Amino acid sequence: MLTKNQLDGFDQNGFLVIDHVLDDQDIAPLEQEYAELLGAKCQMLFQQGRIPSKFEEYGFAERFALTLSACPDCVDDFNISLPLVNGKVEADKYHVHSGPAVFWLLRNDKILDVVEAIIGSEICSSPVLQMRIKPPQQALDEENIAHSNIGVTTWHQDTVAVLPEADDTNQVTVWVAITDADEENGCLVSIPGSHREGPKRHQPGEIAREPTIPESIINGRKGMPLPVKRGGLVIFHKQNIHCSLPNHSDRLRWSVDLRYHPAGQPSGRPAFPGFVARSQSNPGLELKDPMVWKRLWDDARTRIIRGEYSGPIFRDWDNTCK
Ligand SMILES: O=C(O)CCC(=O)C(=O)O
Image (cartoon, rainbow, N blue to C red):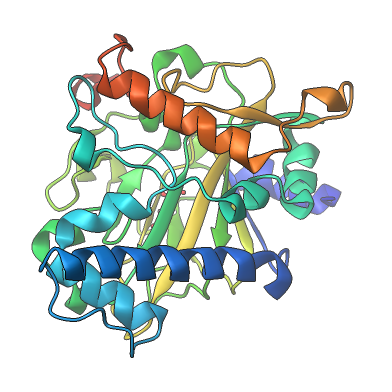
């Protein structure tokens, strides 16, 4: 689990970097699943005449970058949460990938052990999830540079992404490095101790589509880069202020960010499905079937497309001024 030093560091800084948590055996199924997903996407785009070839001769990183640069609107097809749209959605642009390798990553015992050390042994996997596969920035067009799943992520607190119902939820973010992340290819940057400053105003960003904390609040602070190798984790307190650097390398930077909170507390995304990932007190509550998880997402998607869910899906970002 975590040492007292690690827990004290998390309490003091609002983040914790933990190296060497996952190994190849933990990560390879996700890479395989994504290689297949990308292959299927290329096949479809080729049939639709949207790409000149299926890019089969390329490895994953180049193939992903080529696909995205030809079809910038494909980015959401690779995400592990439905797009954040309040109101009416278009079915053919409203997708989520909920494959078994993603499910098993969410239930990975090494990750859950870390989470348990912070929030206890009754753990809900939140539906607030992001797959971030970031090609070298020079391979992206402007639309995609502004999308934080493949382009830049500007200064924010993770609380901005959830509805006020989760204001008291003890949510932690677990950011998993699928590739090495360093200052050149766009590692995370955090302002140590910023979680103690309380919630900050977010506003529409100049570069990013996501809400961002204005420079007047960041006030010249540069933050601390958090490089981490493949298989390492970065844990964030929900009010830690962080961002990530642009990918100025010629390498892919791939991560997945997951959120967990104590079972029974609201996720802040009631339209999307969470599940009990670990329960010491009642293991029977745990969801162990990836097909059931997929069905939960498919059902949520159907409800939203049909207009059967009437509440907001995410916080109105222009109204997060405090
Ligand atoms: O990976 C990134 O670029 C940003 C991740 C992030 O901000 C988060 O996990 O909250």
